[in-house]
Image (tube, rainbow, N blue to C red):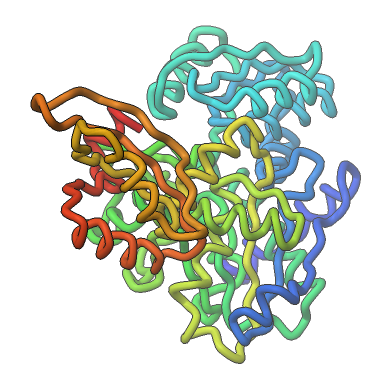
Length: 411
């Protein structure tokens, strides 16, 4: 028996065992995305698992093979924590779960609900890698069994059960499977299950491309900085065991998803389809836009990996989506300090332009003042006409919408 055949058999066995705990997640065609891209788009809805993410699978498989361990320890930005908590209660064992301080409250609260009296949550570290180090140190001291979120063969096998379900539900297969990448457990499982002949695209948040860095270097490397917005996939270093199964993939098969563009995808899926996706869960759908030409006329499966979205973050998601889509801009306007100047400026706005923010910053000279102004337009092209009118009437301004430093202080 080849290594791949053995892996596939073990993944199928894990899938069968899981049916004692939760049903297979739906694999359903999405008409909206299919029409939009002229393709046959299917979603593997891991956001509809009992803990609203695929992490339940790896936790289940690793815990059932843990040789009678009674104390489990893990580190997680949220979804792995919920999977471990759920399974601690299922197996009747204790768990200590370390989570970054920056983890959304929604994920922390759900972890408590799933684990109940069987778990303890410790919030430590601003970034996942700091949390991971603390969890491992505690586990060694307490003599627990550490459940890695992705760098573990049993976890990888558990995530590979998604591939077994896809195979069972879609015997004809798909031309392309698009999947998110954080630490690499899911990606390694799917690639190992289907083998080199299956078309795969791996999607990472632009602010945390640890797989792309590993492909370029030929080995895992640690990123100097990670954007934590896509908290379910913001990992500074791809796992060693996942990398062993991912080595050799083409650089062109690893895609970057800008964080602000992901926000547009999240809102589109929420407003049009009623599908709630967290940032990491939207990665595969977001990648369809740059793949539009390549996927036309083909059957594509997107793995929507999680739906644990804290709706307190919705204003931020909307703000980032508007700015990325070009329909909201922030300007520093040099406004003359004379009667009628403000009215003159307001009269230059288009009929669909809306002032979302207006704040005097300071008087830069006796006759002028600096104003921070936020404007929302119906179409991005509306700003071209507005800027032409401002210039024609002698108004001086600076567009700071994408000026990272100024935006952090002023917006």
